[in-house]
Image (cartoon, rainbow, N blue to C red; front, top):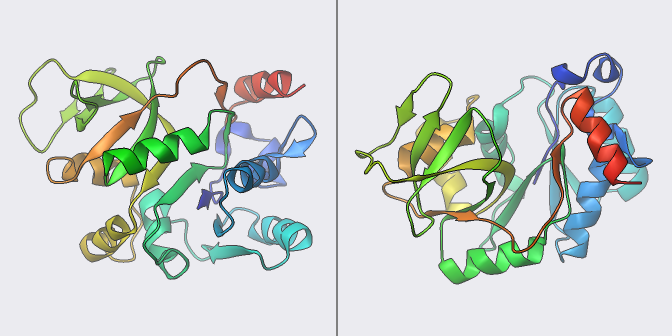
Length: 238
């Protein structure tokens, strides 16, 4: 599933007239870059959620991919990542792991490598992480299992169990692989409401096995959600 419903407020005025997912990087709409990456990794059952300039994004998808891509319609209400998954549940049923990809992430790491790590660990979810600087970190133990969350700006920490104090802080990269049963759990706990998946991960990490994934070797990763980072991605795409 590609999360493409966001308002893109940090990219105004570009997003006043188009969804962030249609902004071009290297002459290619970002949504097309993400779809191409998924297909290259062997993923052909793809769902995209729409809200901001939904008609424009849906038309682009239908014109370029026909009915091969599912549209999860959030025109009535923007549901955030967790709520979006629950809303899209009819498209996401099955036994196969589900790749979740924020449409504003420009990257070239190996999806296949991440999928292999997810399968071999038998984790409930595998999250792309790195040691880049941010204000909010996920906390992992030495085995790579999630234990909590920390906001370094405020000092706030969240964890379902007391933290040991030696957890490794890692930044979440907006790309993750989850087992379908987790969406069923979200639906039973939250219903069809607006909620973020990150607090769900943090609140349930004592019961569920959520693993950090860090790709081998160097790779590009840019959140194109700000003018300065969009410029970086466009330079990398040349």
